[in-house]
Image (cartoon, rainbow, N blue to C red; front, side):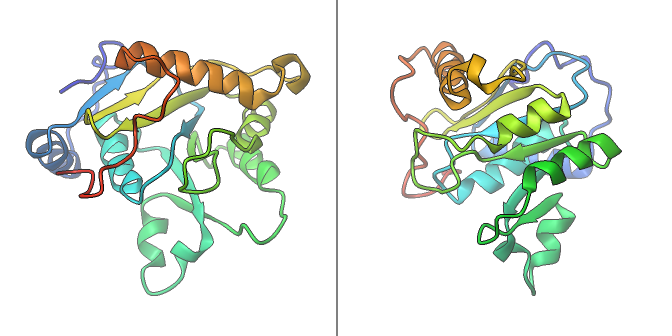
Length: 214
């Protein structure tokens, strides 16, 4: 199945939806999941990057199901939540984000962690589907203010490999990180390079033009 050994001992029963995801995503499409999260990790932010394809959403749903991350919600642009299909994205754990307004999203997410409304949330730090090596830093403030670690997630389409990294904390002082996005980017490159036996200095994860699940 490809789930890392650190997570295999989880005793959740296999749901019908998980069986469907396993059949289409792994058996038919041939994807694998490398899951390096530590056992017992209850609260965290999932930083998903690079986000360069609409297929990321469907791959992400399959990975969330197969890696037993059903309690992880996600942030998405508010236009997806409008009728007639908006209820589907909400039912799948989505929270709308209005990018045209400068509302305090960081405080809202931190409040949801503090109240127990969420235990985990997925964020795409680039803010666009175009490849963007520089990340927005809202996830850094969310993680440090909520007191939760982050894990890194990427989808390597050419190799059909989804990677969930080990967790790591961020410091409370961004200055100590020498630009938080730079620190996270260096960590991301090390994690992905080790996992893919690559150099970590390229963008190997672009979805093929014909689609992700071919």
